[in-house]
Length: 74
Image 1 (cartoon, rainbow, N blue to C red):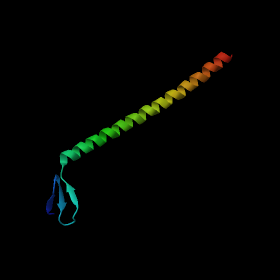
Image 2: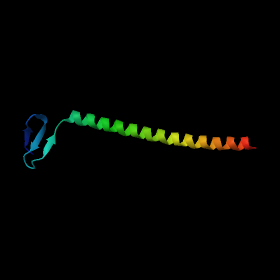
Image 3: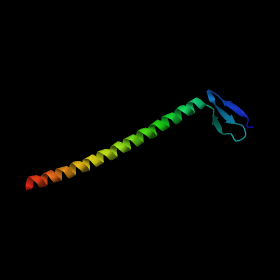
Image 4: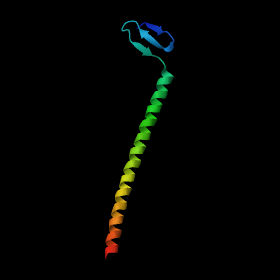
């Protein structure tokens, strides 16, 4: 088992005596980070879907405009 040495002025950080690495034990902060990351990914997917839909609508409007122009030219 690794020996954890508390890092001064950081209650959730510990130094691993064996590797000298810093270990963060703030599980609530990590859970909040993961929840925020998942929300951002979901928001990005939603934005990408909306952008795709807007592009489809723009193409449809261009097609409608072309058809109307052809009808008016007859």
